[in-house]
Image 1: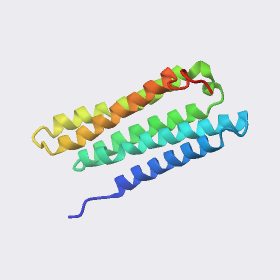
Image 2: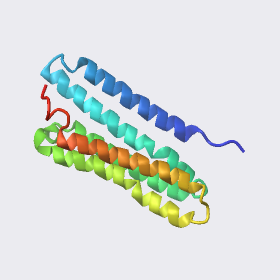
Image 3: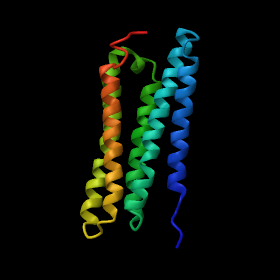
Image 4: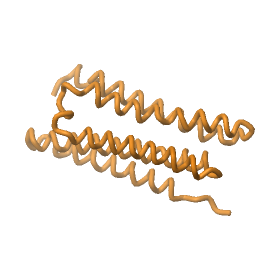
Length: 162
């Protein structure tokens, strides 16, 4: 039986959207203050979309035999991500005053992966080949946390403003 490929296409689509929005943001951000602000929002939306879609392959394949949990976890990360996107697009919550709150939302999305990962370890304890998928998910979560630390600490902007 052929493996289902749509979860990878969802992830690739989200990644391409993230890279496209980031490219547009960094290419045109010097236009004006207003355009810079809108493009930064688009860049953050792209990051959120990539985080959401990056959960699709591991959760789909880890819970391939239990569609209830697939739907629960994929629906959970999608709702969490859409809430983050709505927050990012809110003019009030886009100010510098709420930088820590936005960072918390990204950390929460990244750490959300721990719940299905722990569940998968418990359910699939006797299937060590599933641990490869869990290792990829752990690296993904670590990458998101490191990226959030750069965002919160304002590195490299802190060292060389402008």
